[in-house]
Image (cartoon, rainbow, N blue to C red; front, top):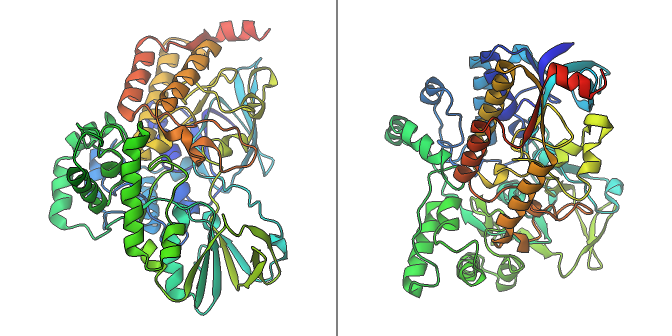
Length: 540
């Protein structure tokens, strides 16, 4: 089965890529492991799953008709509502006819002689295409659960990244939740409403702000829709992919009273943007950051009644914002319930999971169910999970043995005609993903048009451009506090994964300008070849 383009993944990135390529006359096929569209929002069905970008921003802007007709119901949409939106997009643009569901890609290799990618699926099917695009998402592969004994547990186990489609009723059960990242913080309050007993096992506490979620009023929705063009344009040239709060002062140059007032407004806003950008130096100056971190810890102490539990929930090992802060609904308040308890794994590490429960610090606690909220192999997991081989059989896993290397997070030296959407080295998880997805899809689509219009059949990032971009990504990251945290941004949550800052922290707007500059210079930093040149280079 031959196509111009093969796309892996039917989340928002894959769907929009398909739509854009169709509009330019390419034959394209999407290969999707699941049996429906939605990507992250198809797989992540755990209780309380929500986006931490406001609904009005977490949506496509490429179709004015689409953004006017769709009605979001809440400030922060739930997983079911986002999945309904994904299905609406698929229906509206008739995308399913070019998506092959239930198709997991195992291998993809570049044929130097023919200049084609050959892709093999778990079903034994083989596809070929001139161009190969991975639209597999940044948080789509759960990290391995590295806790001994879990196969011996006689109760039920669940993972937040692979939740049963019909849900789970924990009524009357003794439940353990292992992990306190975003999925745990969202699900714990809901599980606590059902469970007879809930025990949370925490290794590293997270900073979390109240989301202040609420239904959207009809008049505010109308106002947003009326201002969408300007709102979207501001997002495209912002830091994080939503209109910026522009701070003008350092946290250290204002009085304590003024600083607290700014933090109180940010905290009450229920948005990450307003806290992270409250002052000019929160993410680059440790002393400034300390003021925000201590403000957040004071909030935890105020909410959680038991002093020992409150202190255990206070992060101290990393600067505020350098691990993605969470947004919650009654998370800290949940620890005030009499049937909810916290186990601090820093003091009493898990020794093993037993047939009846979890043993930590020499104490075995018995449970009917265990929920693993242990996170993802972020940004690179979905890419290296597929056996991808470029020119000369070069394995992507080998090339990235010391950490991912890309040019702009779009192309990789040694891998011709291969693109990644929101790959390592791009803003991706440091931004509103919808804005970054649209920017990458549109850049790739225009690139393919350029190649076709100019008679090129092969494009590949040069090693020099790739090395320069990797150096720039690291330089920008090193100017911030982000590398000081053992975060999934750094790959530090996965044992053995190279400790490298994975996304680009230079801002959505500056990154867009760089990509536009590269395209405007005839795709500077990429080597372009006609069909004749490519075949001669391959010895054909």
